Length: 134
Image 1 (cartoon, one colour):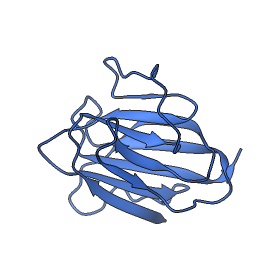
Image 2 (cartoon, one colour):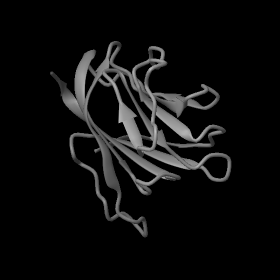
Image 3 (cartoon, helix red, strand yellow):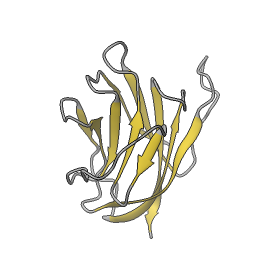
Image 4 (spheres, one colour):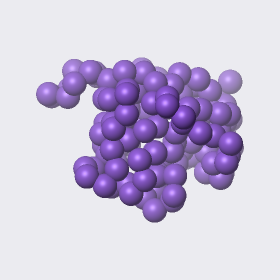
């Protein structure tokens, strides 16, 4: 089930998803389309030219064939610690941010991130969050 969606205009080509805490300064993309650590995932996106469409889903209730969207590719599948049960989505410089309402009990959750352009310059990002903490 889709639980949230937001269109963000970002000035920096890296979108961050994760805990409400600070992003670790050691987290870097390099040449990869995404990178993650225990609390955050960063994804390469298209900056300054288009809105980035981000959709949040719970547990696999995501339809990959909506409208004329091209299929999305998984760039991260792992666990994130959400200490306060909320997820932040925004550019890494903090100019554009969206914070979900309480997702449930704080804790580690399985998170899958899918994008429309896995080689970079993504304009669509889907995030699937497990309802259960681990």
